Image (cartoon, rainbow, N blue to C red; front, side):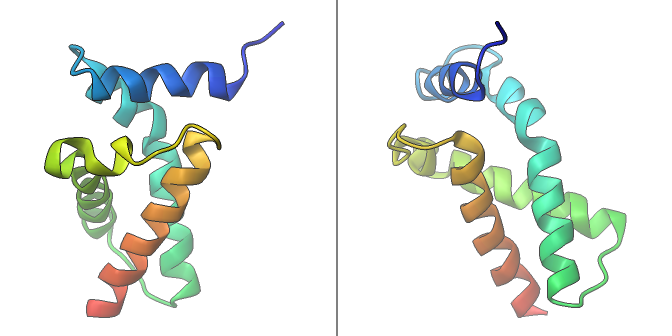
Length: 102
C-alpha cells in the first residue's frame, strides 16, 4: 500500500522545524511544483503576464516567507490538514499581494 501524502509531508515539515540537515531543500523540492502552479494560476486569474524570471522570483519570495522568523508559518501549521492545502492558501495570498502591487 502506498503511503499517503500526510505520511510523507508531515515528516518534512517536522524536520524543517527541528533544523535537520537538508530538510529545507527537501521541503522546497517537494512543494516547488505546487507553489509554481499557484503562482501561474493566480497570475492567470489576475490577468497578469509574468516572465519566467518573475515567476521564479515570486516562488522564491513565497518560500522565503515560510522560513521567515524561524519558520513561523510552518510552526503555525496545526497538522490537521494537508501541507499542500496549507501552502496553497498562503502561496495564493502572497501571490495576490505581489500581483496587486504592480
